[in-house]
Image (cartoon, rainbow, N blue to C red; front, side, top):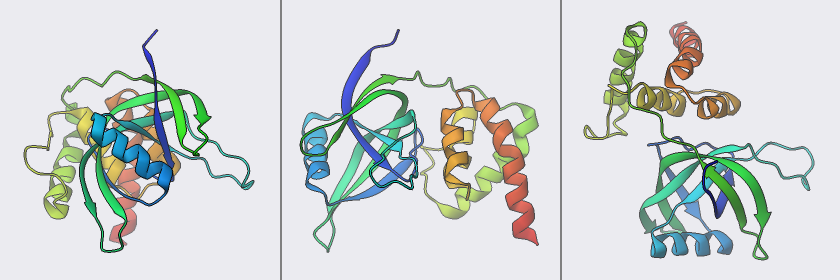
Length: 197
């Protein structure tokens, strides 16, 4: 049984992966308070995908999300608070409660980080492809890149590919990087073929 902790949960229609960066604009008072508390206490908050619902009164999220650490902040020209978060570790949501100010507080269990083992030879072509893509888009500095880690590679593909949000969530929920690469490989092939037509 892992340790359960309570922390603020930010439900979004986007997904944060471990080691990914996600810029956010913060304008609601409950989230401004949350951000200032996290920055003051150097704590993380959880980002989790909210489910689409046709009923506006229904609010649901998926059960697996990622802890976010605030690594940078600025005030935009529009006066809004801009923060950059970095995904640290996956978590499983056990329970979700709303505070009086509307902030969601989740009881979570941290999911152990995957080991950094090398991608198997079968995926060499994907490693080469990712190197080319990241050289092109320049969103990761050289010291952040980890092409020797199947986990890092699989999360980067899940992050940058134009996948359906449910497929991205599926990638987050898979707890084995080789299985995640197996899941992604046909999707990558399909995207490449359609872009070459």
